[in-house]
Amino acid sequence: MNTLKQYIQAAGENKVAIGHFNISDLAGLRAIFEAARELNLPVMIGTSEGEAGFVGYKQAAALVRSLREQYDYPIFINADHTKSLEKIKEAVEAGYDEVLFDAGRLLLEENIVKTKEVVEYVKSVNPNILVEAELGYLGSSSNILTEIPEGATIKKEDLTKPEEAKRFVQETEIDLLAPAVGNIHGMFKNMPNPRIDTERIKELRQAAGVPLVLHGGSGIVDSDFVSAIESGISIIHINTEIRFAWRKGLNEAFAEKPEEIVPYKLLPYAIDEMKKVISSRLKLFNKK
Image 1 (cartoon, rainbow, N blue to C red):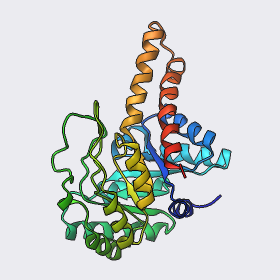
Image 2 (cartoon, rainbow, N blue to C red; image 1 turned 60 degrees about the horizontal axis):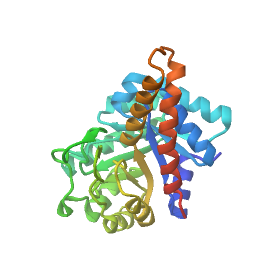
Image 3 (cartoon, one colour; image 1 turned 90 degrees about the vertical axis):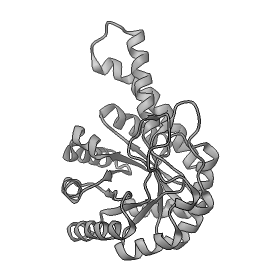
Image 4 (cartoon, helix red, strand yellow; image 1 turned 180 degrees about the vertical axis):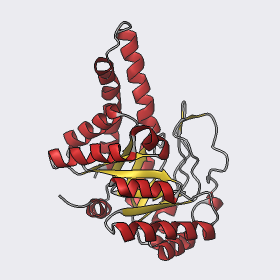
């Protein structure tokens, strides 16, 4: 089996993207794994600090590792939006394949200093763990939105700049860059999210020289995904959409089986709804 780094490199070369989906429970993990395996595509599991706090860093890493080993399948785990070195250490010690250090709200200089510290620590422990960092603020919650998150980088003049991306990568030596290109976390219930600046993605990929990651994928129109991948995106994060599907599935389960109390008889409804979303996204991300 190839390494995560090799799969990401191949995605860039083939103009496709690896799907990255977050989990909070076993139902989510099962839905993601089954959808990816049915399509024979590599996949990434993410846990934010909140999600990892609920599932457990060691437990989440062990679950993903067990699937990879039992089925000899390319499924990997990322510590998504980790905001402190302390939590980065927990993920590294648990055996995560990648960590995302999120200091995107900070000014460039401070972001560089803190990110460099994370890279130095991670690579000293295990040079094979990938380090991703965020440059630009995308909001902080994977929820249904009614307005643009305060402080989110949406205006063209505020998007991640190629010259800053180049400096950021060179000084921190990160493996992956998550830029602000019009994307935000969360999704609007009754309309698509803001459009993505795919021309800026192309400029950033050339300037940064490392694979780019698109966060806040939920709610983005399909044509923007296709253009973003063509322009240099190698990984796409989806979370809110599958949370919404999880809730929809459980609502259906409760409506059809109001007296049922057995979790493993109710959760398949949520799994089925999540699989529909995940499969659809994976097919789109790998459309050639």
